[in-house]
Length: 332
Image (cartoon, rainbow, N blue to C red):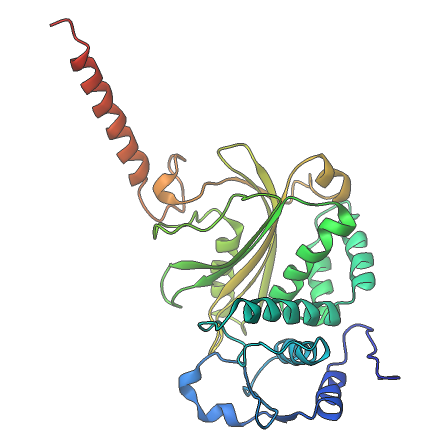
């Protein structure tokens, strides 16, 4: 750290953040106390404003701790007074608290993945003539951040530097380690509401989505080796003929973390074909997909999780309406 600035060479040296918090903002860090609070579960950090002590859960990965520290630097550097004191989603006290948390999270991601470096690396990746997942894995390793942080950073940079405006970001959590239920826990849509998106009807999300398929692959992989990341790409075509190139990173469940996947979906249009050279690589799986099983017309789907009951209900209603119309308008 020089002249109050941090060295942004990647992978980012996160000890700089701890020094800034301690020396400039008067923090103390405690990496053991949260272990005494088993009821807090996955909670990664708690900030105690009266003592300026930051409690960090033992066992955090380097990437997880880096994000927590970067967010704390942001709250102080940006002078954000209304802020959450934990890293998890709890009932919030005000809109300003939500906004400031977003600002601090954005700041942390930008700090750990410096814009100029990452844009240069993304240009090189997108110019590859073939889909090479190991190159995407190398980027994740180079920046030493979590998959979710990396993919969210893409949504910040792709519109401005690559003119890719039509995209979505999704995070899926596996509800329970031993069942086949999935929860869409985060979603972001740029330019318009894209497929897929969340439903409030408790229906079964399409199992053909790469987001869910890779969670399942990560779970199977974890049975034979240590939990790891699985990554993949898929071109997904929806009934309205929209097609998306989906890039997904998935992680198997850990002792206190659920299995998750994060996906950035990019609308397949002329702009995308100009920017991403490997889009037509036959190695990328192409799938016809839908929103939910209950509303899906795909016959003999190999991964259907529920019958198309909504389609059947609509068909019965149309038949009933047609029969009533015929009776009403009959000559006798």
